[in-house]
Length: 277
Length: 256
Image 1 (cartoon, each protein chain N blue to C red):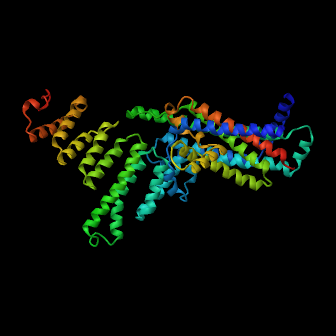
Image 2: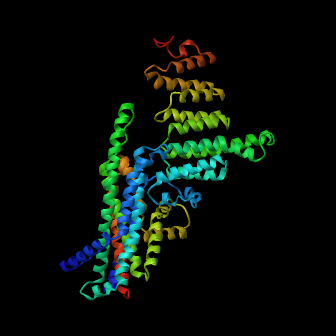
Image 3: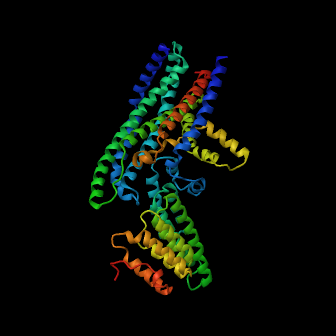
């Protein structure tokens, strides 16, 4: 077990170093950061929402969009670079199992995305905090209700986003394990993320007693195969209205994400074991 | 054999993930603004997929609203309605979108339709009236949805009451909306009077007086100034109903 951990950690570290040096990562983190910081300048486009909601939504959007792109493209790229350059062959010729290889890739990429998510969340937190101070002063002067901002909620949201990206990485690695080309893995991975993001529609229908048995059966299978990625998007409620979030919501979503991650990684390992390199 | 165990374990993990995800979704569902399947269908192809998928809902709802104004200027009814409804669907908790979609549908679109059919001189009066009423009904549906999504926003109830009164000429329906507005949080000061006036004009004069009096005694009279305008209206009602002195509201010390 100790040797298993050591080898996985070693591959994780190598993957992390390789990923963090990528220009693609630097480009997207700068773009995401610029988007969060510029949100204050776009306030004039807002119609009747609270200002903090608008700024927060801008940041969440950046995290969602660029995070998803990074999760899909970078994972597939890191996996296929090893296959195409034949380094995987050399590596797997040593006493390294395919499961260790896949787990190393997973954790390395996930660590890079942790940096991405927490840097953007830090910037967003700073922007929201500075604006909330100004808005609170203004509200006090005008005798209005001050807007609420919960830093703890932002941390919880960042953790959930990181978990969501973990599920995305696991999905892409599973697809890449069975795929022949990088392009195929990226396209199918992106489609799977979109499908996961819309999976809640199937779950919503299942919660209501409507439709034929056949229809409900298809929805049941769909809602089991694909993870519900929409459930991670509770940032608005967590950051701006924390009292509206049930106490166990974050924990439940986190557990659900973790189980899906394990399920996808197990399937990925099974597929990768059968793959000819 | 090892592969078989691994496969069974993976399958168990998968079913567990799906089942648990259902539980967690039930818990977080109330925190996520509702977008129904029917709201999504007309929005597809409008470039708002990103908003439906996850982040930037507010930003994309705002962008969609700006685009709807362009179509409003062109008097493009289907396009404008689709985009306005899209903005409402993307950010269902925003009062602004519901209120203005209701106003545009209830007050503007019927006139666009009359003009499209040749103008006010050409379209018969009864057809014009039918158009005003049918668009007002559709606008009321939008406002009703808005009331549900915003948790009973008073401004939306007032807009609905106004529309029912002016376009549908249905004073009882209008009174119902004003009554709900009176009972909601942040009710405007004029909502009880509008409700009572509509009931009165619809012929339910005793009911109107009873309700208005109850509201005045329980709520309005406890305000800082005692709501003298409402008391004046109630006195006029008492006179019109020929109520004996004993049945009238006891005179407060400050009443002129």
